[in-house]
Length: 142
Image (tube, rainbow, N blue to C red; front, top):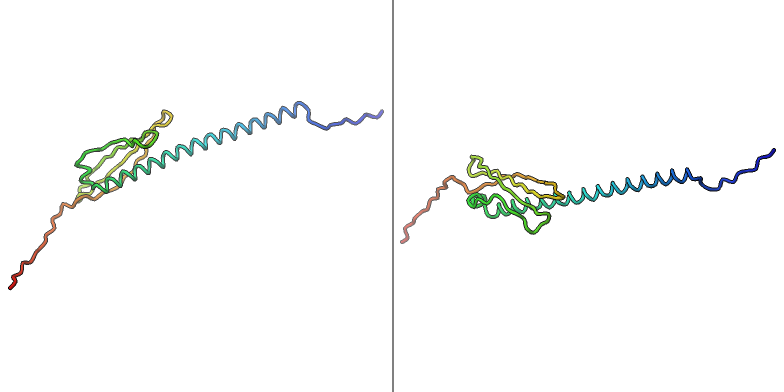
């Protein structure tokens, strides 16, 4: 007896279900990777903004002078123009060497109910406490 040839010109139900499951898993994985990448990019942008704000505050302290900054006593504040609400805190520590100060500046912010912070330190040299002597000559004119 001769068996007739079967015409296998398609996929059966099991093959179609397996291919659909693999495709669904791949799409979900790519979606999760994309979401994490976007979240990481947003957080990186916030850290870059905080670093720029620290640099801006250090430039302001340098412009006004560390001695004036210490005298004013303002050690914290808020950057109102930037979201998500960046706050800064500064601490100054006299180094005992001819008006040299260690300044630590910390910027804090909250995103999605999670706190973040970035700190940086630098040294500022204030007015010198050494005495400079100057001599003047007085001449007699005739």
